[in-house]
Length: 562
Ligand SMILES: [Zn+2]
Image 1 (tube, rainbow, N blue to C red):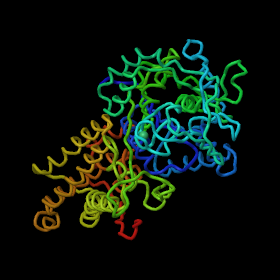
Image 2 (image 1 turned 120 degrees about the vertical axis):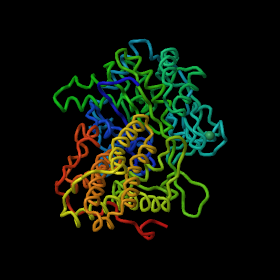
Image 3 (image 1 turned 90 degrees about the horizontal axis):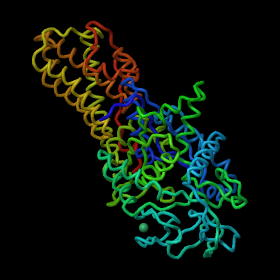
Image 4 (image 1 turned 180 degrees about the vertical axis):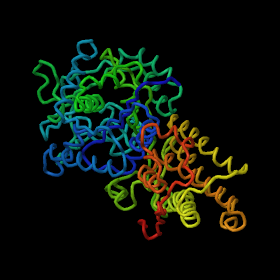
């Protein structure tokens, strides 16, 4: 793998038209946060960028439903979602907004440069028009039957049932989705602006061919688009809510830039604003335009075409931007209700939404992070269930990790005067246990670098498992009288494993990692470079330790919804 001087990590911008739920978190945010925390702990230059996507029809639809303005909708959900991410320990360097003037300016600049390069052209298209409402209907204002799988209630440009994207005119039995409309729309001529994706076929093909280490879902989807041949794609819409089309043309009236054109530019805008706020307005270019920087996008699988084809084409068309090094797309996390055989989508109307803020308020951020990583939908869809949440957080987090920490620290506090006992002459088992710390560190690091977060967390937990086994085999409760020096050596080793765990937990369980570090009196696990010191700078003999708090109190069955 090539080495990079800097890494820019982005998570898909969530729509500011509702609260984020744990399905969102598991897809594009938690894995990215683990990756970023790991890189920071390795002392790497990494920037983590996200923000609200505040344009698009879902926002105007929500405003219409609530009888309010789009601005009121985005102000509310931008604030709520930023707070929910913070509560979940998702540590963005900046959480921006696409309603910022800086974003409108950056989007206009992208559009103009593409147009100047001949990559954007105006075309006449046939578009649905509601005669009842006297308006052209953007794709999301049209519903109908999926042309591919026949599902009813498919959206104008995409089917939620089978995941296919299509042109709105391919939809069968179209009807207007404007609240209070519902009429059958008619096709009329309309002028729009198109991005000439076809001009990027070769460049994107060469770029994707080299991305052999990408997940199969991401690369497969992108190569599928290329095989079918890239076609010009409309990047403007009939709406009053969005970035103005930066052309001197009366046809632009009543139209705006399509939200899917401007949203990924939000990554650029937010990096620029981050740099400006630090008093180094050009610093953003070191992440977007430098050959020794890598860009890593974390997304849900529905966003693959935009991040692996369309946005890279937009970047290529600018002339001086680098293309993403990795696009990490997760499958979907679904909801499995107790007693039911099949999982369903998280859905507010079906009562299957678990909002991030509410979850953290009830169970704490680290329990949520642990479970969502344990069931991460990395290679296929996966299922959230309350029963499984209870089983895993009690049986793994509390019984393995929490138990090892608690028994080691309380034994040392009680029998060794709350100090790290002397190692003495360690036997083979003790030396092997100590050596395992650095081995686990390297294994966890390798897995995180490969975006295998589920396996990485298992590898981290393995150190606690090993610690419990060692504690049981050494029987310090017996050697305390029969062989005090050996008992001291056993506890010395256990505390060193604990110190290793405090830091190794950092990317996954940041809050508990900090608490454990405090009990052991070791450095802040999130300090730059702390990762490399795992297993290297050991606890000093005689160093004080604090009586342990219980890191993960057990949950009772009645603590979770039935
Ligand atoms: Zn379908």
